[in-house]
Image (cartoon, rainbow, N blue to C red):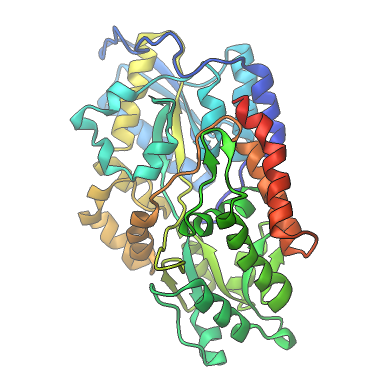
Length: 434
């Protein structure tokens, strides 16, 4: 499954314009206080899914309502694309027509949390029966804003190194291992590159989107750097500059890196045998399988033995309509949907990693790793996702600034230090105001 690209600045501007200040469930009260589990209630669920996954979601909603006949779930994708959900939610906040539950990209969490429309699930998920700690830490952190929990992770993933065995064999290069350094990665990329056959050692997005930005974060963290220091940009530290310099050297000096202007070309080129290695996630496995690629998966190369990765978890965000029964039914449904038993019918059924560690022993997980070679490696690699992207209202704009900086550097139009300093300067104001 190809990862869908995050919504851009237009959606952010609309959302901030439609909603003023505040945080999750601003009055501090439990939105579901007084919930009657037997009350007749209708809730709206925007799934944000593609056609095939939407059918699975509708089937699960029907399964839930059969067991809870007092609950009606109006299920739809919510928008024509997942990217459009943020704009649709913004308009709904203004007009009062927003759903009870919506899929959301993790990078939207800060904006949604400050809308004043979300439930606060902090007490709810802390109950032992919820199994909150079975969900990876980075995903839990993404759902949390200023101590409030605005939703439940819907999907977990991470970046690992996927390599084309046939290209390695043809170049006489040893396969990557979990112990690889970034120097090993760079050396292999140079050997794999064959301009006469249009083969590149690796690839990187230079669209300036979040796909550009989040691929830098593991290298920054491995170098000991931080994205933010409080609300101040910190990615332009020596750690960030050194991380970006490695990528610049590969793109500009070695010319071993294919630069994708769109986010959409580098995985198909990998599948077609024109790229030797990509930093990608479990969503790529289905396409790899369909393309018949002989591939392998390892954890990311590291600096000084640190192999941290980044996770891009998405969320089921729960919204408050000042109706205890709607709020309570929404919570109960999402608890059921993200339970060990149901998630195996959801995420594993549509090719995603399981949401919970407890699913590793299920028959569905065994079938998943058999069907998708590399699935076990991605599941194990969740342990290397030790930090989360910041859940702050200014993240999206900051990400765009960093993405633009990376794109300039990799195309030889700027040096790492000056580009990251410029991105930090542009981002400082919006972060301080978040």
